[in-house]
Length: 290
Image 1 (cartoon, rainbow, N blue to C red):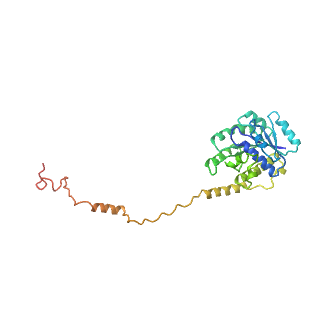
Image 2: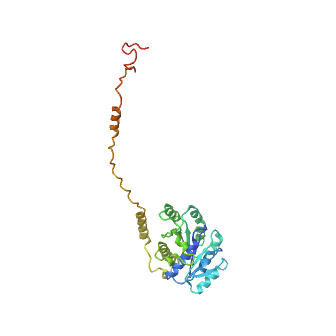
Image 3: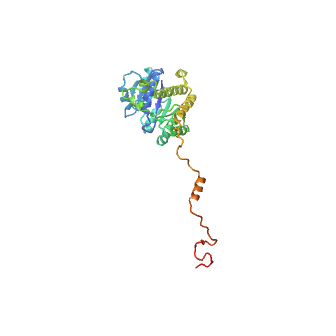
């Protein structure tokens, strides 16, 4: 049995929603028997699974002290992949869970606060020598900070080439215990989860050196990223401005014409004497001024 741990020190990163979606997608993709383990005392994942009617994925509510025993029991049951949701902000607790991981994923929102919080999780994964993958979660489409966050995270580890965007259907689909792939399988959100799981399945297979885990189909994420960028650029192009009707009124004069017209509107020229006296001033003819 192989274990994937979703860990993040920052609360509100979307671990629970992403963990539930990935577990269902893994089961739907035929990766084998999948179990979902909730170690978060809040129990959000437990409430979601209790509202679910489908029998898979399997579910276990486990504390930190009995996590090892729970994993061993799942292994004897024939579970192939276990995906664990962890509590936020409790570094010691996360460390105990990461110790059981074969692959660690770190959901991270593209925000300064989330980026500053990844350091502790990275340190834990490195301490246990576990492979780590960042997943940019709840991103805004075509936002500059999303790309900048990917660049910043790449300095600390591998970043998944699939970005999970902020859409209402992710949370809305979990109201009755389902996921977006079960409600709207052809939606953009369902495609993101599907591609992300294929990528993680491939990385898990390489991490544990088990070629049987390799997915039957693996999309070319490099080409796909280029196509998505091209689509975004095409969507960003605005319509050309409407044509302005030609001016049909009185012809406007140029600046030079205005100057000539202004000069013509002045009265008779009043010639000035070299000393600033006008011909009409007293004493101009005699040259005697008072």
